[in-house]
Amino acid sequence: MSTLPEVRTLHVPDGLEGERVDAALARLFGFSRTKSAELAGEGKVRLDGAAAGKSDRVRGGAWIEVEMPAPPAPVQVVAEPVEGMEIVHDDPDLVVIVKPVGVAAHPSPGWSGTTVIGGLAAAGYTITTSGAAERQGIVHRLDVGTSGLMVVAKSERAYTLLKRQFRERTVDKRYHALVQGHPDPLSGTIDAPVGRHPQHDYKWAVTAEGKPSVTHYDLVEAFRAASLLDIKLETGRTHQIRVHMSAHRHPCVGDLTYGADPTLARRLGLARQWLHAVRLGFEHPADGSWVEYTSEYPDDLRQALDAVRESS
Image 1 (tube, rainbow, N blue to C red):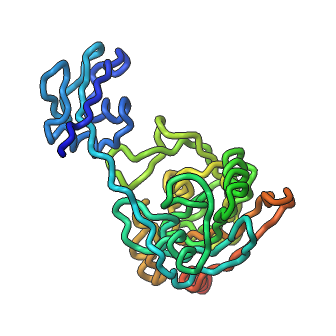
Image 2 (cartoon, rainbow, N blue to C red):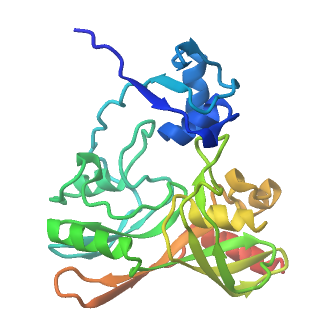
């Protein structure tokens, strides 16, 4: 049996007078600019009843009508071993792992590779927390191209208390990043909002419409062409470190998505951004005691760092 598409209609506020249709859709409905343009191109957007193109301008007081895209199909968890995933700690409430590069935290539309959740399931772990089945126990994430420490809740108690700690910013999350050039100052704080990139769905950017984002960094070691930084996140936005360092003209070495030099990446044999979650500290949900875990650099990052050090 076919179902009619969902149609939503909103009144255009005067503050959006003169905005392009795709920009107005992004502001009013939360779509990306790319998705907004796609909907307009498919004839699914109308202004006061008339079809609207992506570059048409909206009028304050007009009614904008959108045929909403169908919700994505449910994502299934596939129990599949994850090569190189290290179990650092395991108890009835939680498991701490080192996530290798090339692995997602959980399944999502468009991702067909291995996941932390699938790897834990294949290893016999049972995650008993609320929320979507494909995100069971996930209280924070690392990018597919970023390696390092993650904690996954196994019990409902751990899930609730760990989520609270991440929300209240009491978790100590430390990363090491090898960035191009030499930040000025060599230690400091980047306080700049991060949100969806206005043109590219897969990227994020410093943007006035983004969420508050704070990154603290300290120099660990300086080289001729790069700097090794210790980074502490006060917030945890998607791609936050990569976006902040790129916005300050010091992208992570190998991070071609955010403007890194491809020649340097090739010379170092680096196929991803030089970024690793080296330390993770939090209050254990069982008794409130402070626990802390550390992780060494994986081989690809260590070899690239050695090469940078030898050439300096």
